Structures are given as structure tokens and as C-alpha cells.
Length: 287
Image (cartoon, rainbow, N blue to C red):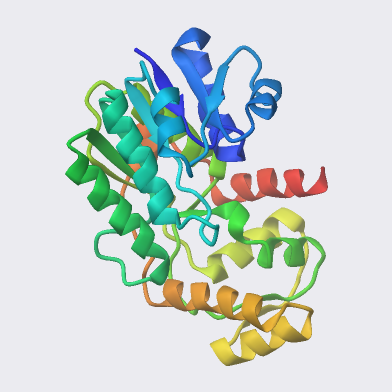
């Protein structure tokens, strides 16, 4: 059985490859990357093949002999649209005879109203239509995504948000990646996984950060307008501020609410506490 991972030089991809290597022979793993030399340096002992999402022809050659593929969603806003990039991978996989695709998707991608979900919904549909076996790994939210709140708390500055009591299923990026690897290795995986940690609000996050940092910073729940003004005043561009606030709005509206146990079940062990996870994120920030 041959396994391939797209975007293998990214943090997520590297973690997936390393977890696979802990469970199967290195010779059965293929790292797909734009820069194969970089992949060989980062993932010694693993075969690297050209894996640009832009070239269906190249991908077809690189996927020859592959049985199971992890398609890690690409970054939007590139010269070739994300949905076209994903379609290239799916087409290439079908032509190459790949039998199974696991795809890193968005929470409730089939029904989510968020603009962030559109490419994922279309990709899921394209995979269904391909006739290839599949699992959709609908990753909730990385704890590492909180690039405003966590560093502020560490430096004893106000913890500011506008998501009100909206709930998020925070978990560590490495946990989502490990779960993706475990799904690839599963003989009879589910078609849809709603991966998430326990439901928490930003107030919960702030109070956990107070415990971890031993800081008594102010917790400020603002309106979207107030938060956006504050972000701009502290150096964010209007566009960046609008993007941050739009995500807060989606959370407030319930887009990331999910109570599934899929993540710990796929991992085969309980998730760490929020405080433990925050300590890990903060330790990485210090490096």
C-alpha cells in the first residue's frame, strides 16, 4: 500500500508524513511538494516527487502507484484558483488509479454559509463525483490561529474579541495532522469527520490564558466595529482588520459550533486540556 501527501513541506504535511513513518515503512510514503529538494531535507528517507497543484500532468506522473492520498487544501488567492488546483489533484488521482482521497476541509462544509467554506464545498463535491473513495476531514480551528489573543495575554496586554459567546472547537494543528494520518491508515474510515476540540468561548480561552500565564490582563468583549477600529489603531491594515473581524462574526453566528468526538476517537486518545494546549503553543512562540 502506497501513501502520498500533498503539501508535504508545510507544518501540517510534515507532521502527517512523520506520523505515517512511525507506523509504516518509509518506502510506502511519498511526499508531494513544489520543491522536492526542500522535501528531501525536511523529510529524510522519504521519497519526494513533484507536487505542484497547478499541473495536472505532473501530478498524474507523481501519483502513479499511489493507493491512498491526503489532499491538504491549498492557499487561496494564487494565480491558479484554489478550486482549480484541487480539481487538478482530483483529476490526476483518478487518472493515476488512486483508490482513496482524504481531504482537509472546513467545518460543516456542505451547509456552512461562510465564504471560507465555498472552495471546500466545491472540492468535496468534485471528490464525490470522481468515484474515488474518500474521507472529508473537516478541521474546526487551530489554537495556533489565535495570533492576536495569545501573544497579547503572554505580554499582559488586553485580550480583545468580538465573537461574544460564540463557541469554537480549538485543537492543536499537530492533533488535526495526526488524525489525518490515522484516517489514511484506517481500513474502513468514515466518509465525514467533524474534527474539533471541546466547545469553548473566547472568554473561556482568556480565563485559561490567565491561569497559564499567571497574568491578570483585561478581557474586553467589543462590538465588531469597536474591535475593527482597535485593530487598525494598533497597526493592522483595514483589510486585515476586516478579515479578523469577519472571522469573529462567523464564530459569533455559530459557524464553528460542533460537539463531535471524531478527533479523540481518530487519535485513539483523549485531547489535552485547553491549558495544556496553550502551554504548548506559548512554548513554540518563545522559540
